[in-house]
Length: 521
Image 1 (cartoon, rainbow, N blue to C red):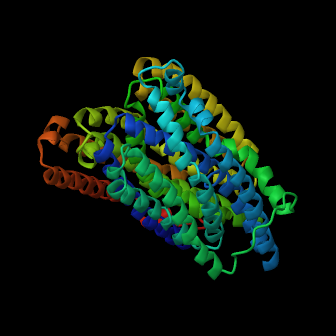
Image 2 (tube, helix red, strand yellow):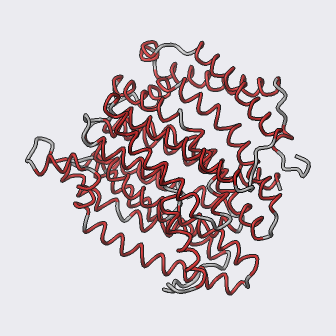
């Protein structure tokens, strides 16, 4: 089983790596075009709303509810019944998301006023920055249909993932990045408001992603006619699981929206500084955390359906060990190399040294919670695969309320950085509650060997971070380097850090067999 998980994880990580690299190229192009000013704030706002809903209706709650039910049908029902389930789900979900998309486009001003309340107040009082509310509302009309495309894309990806075809869904986001980059280069310079060119790129990217997966569904003979079947047993089961999961799996996204709401009251650039920091955080989170969570969910669901609690626990244990091994050094690396990475990636065009410094402070705060974000992604499937959505919802609500309080506590003295601190702390709380729930329920208990593995990883990561801290010059030295010199130095630090981390793990006794799922572990 471990070989299959490792192979699947490598496939997803490889495809995700391509997407994340192009995502960084996209952000470099955007930073060069707009920097961290008002135009960037407006685009990031208009892009964040449909992406938030995407993770509610598509990749987040829906996938967590749909994959276990589809796995159950695959193992216990006929092929025709599986097709009937897909037909019912696609027709029902498609109808609902169509209505939501239409309402979102028509009500873009209401949505902008809700989540960008600071801009709305400026507009209401005829303030100097009233234009922000108007432009954000117009831009949201263009970006909101992305929700429709990506929801059905996520449905297709969930089907293919359940069948073990992970590469297609993992590669699909590449097209969004290509579309935005293309529009940023060729469309935005032709417009009076260049941010609208990026919004067009989001729309086109969603359309291309949707069309890309259709041939693969057809190849698997699962491209069926959508039908509205609200009372289909499978649909009933999925929506019963999905409704509470809307809160449980998407707590971090709700927290990010709360950050946006509060940031609309803060100085211009706050949303952008948080965005650029979050983009660097998303790189290892998607490459490792989401990739591992993606491949273990079908396996956990299969173990639950087969009534094999030992296999279930071993799979979850593999996920936690893997996340620690990859996530802990990534967390430390982001903290130590925050300023150099932001300088190399974004400091050109409209993005200046001040933006590097301001973004770095939010990245330090976000990165402190990276491991927690990853653990939430891995621990949550431990509940959803067992078709238990109520427990993580309870934990998620606790974490969300805590985040609201922490936002107020930390935003007053630390501004936008306080929002990032609150998000990281609430994610840590959520991860701790998820683990404790599995432990208390007798579902998963961290074994002594796993504790020994985690201790070795922590020691090795500390050695790596100490070396990087010693070898990394001050920001002023980075700004004096030429771009090519800075790139070479940064690559050298990353490669050296990775080598020291792996060597330290070997010295401390960590071996490949510690990441294999064996009965005797």
